[in-house]
Length: 152
Image (cartoon, rainbow, N blue to C red; front, side):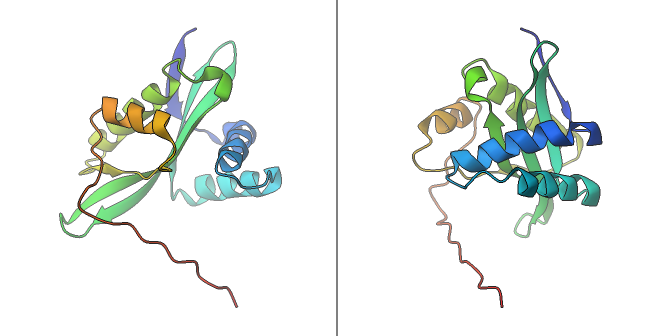
């Protein structure tokens, strides 16, 4: 099967939203296709993320990654945060995730990004193995924190 990667187009919204909904379910969120679709529409409309897709002519979209532009204040340079990476379970171990990561890296290089950052679940060993095989380095210096914001 021949797999290609490219940036998502507005015509991909429905298919990307379905993948995004599955991605959220992987991270134990309830399925909510309308929410997923609106989120993807907003990201593409506002141009505040880059969505890359992997596809095959015979099977359609197989996976996606989503990059958020950000900055590194210490380096005083732009970076990408690779926040989402998802491959359909039936297409895992076929190189789809690797292709998406390489496409993200190529896009970051062309756009002059200093680096890409990502986080993943501690239990997601398969993803960690893939990242490390491509030269991603585990951060052993910084500790990440998060805080939920109560909406009034």
